[in-house]
Image (cartoon, rainbow, N blue to C red):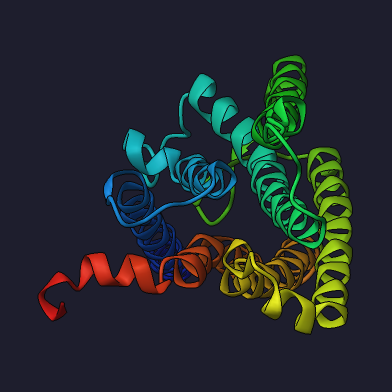
Length: 283
């Protein structure tokens, strides 16, 4: 009887793992296709914050699927300690990375909108080196900071570094890293949603003036809508994921985690110029 129960549990774990990996890889492949299209298609242009957004979500996918790439996902023996610790540090840092890169994208949209509302500058266009450097590097600085802290914590307490019960990835069996990640991500997302609402209010207030201005093409209205939608999805999805993982259902939480890259692809990979490149036979 115990053997039968064990085999049923193992079969359920493998099914849940396949669902997790299917969503992760689907989103990752889609985002990779979008990124390559934006980089090499001559008629597709994207700001570096948009490209960076795609890159950070690819890092997110790799972080959560590292055991699958290593071939140590489902074997009876635990994954080797260096690999398990590396993945644990990556999965606690990845949500912070993508939250910050999404915030950078929203911030860049606000800068674009505010520039369009001001009179055109006379003379040479400002370069904004510091601002652009922050938008590009801030996600990675925060990400590396989290990785280093988790690596130190896992090195000091190696007995806490284990593969999770669902076989999906390695974690640290204390609540502290997850709680710190959740708090940091929540803070970033709340600020981001506040900025989304403010951008919406400014657009509504200045809608007629922007449509009649001599620079309407500078305002990426479609992208603003897509970013706002994705921002609210991130808040709801990641919030639910943390709740499920802590109290209710690990499978539900992991499924939401795995769906996020796929949602990112569906929101940002279905823009008209990208689809026109892919559906070249319809031109």
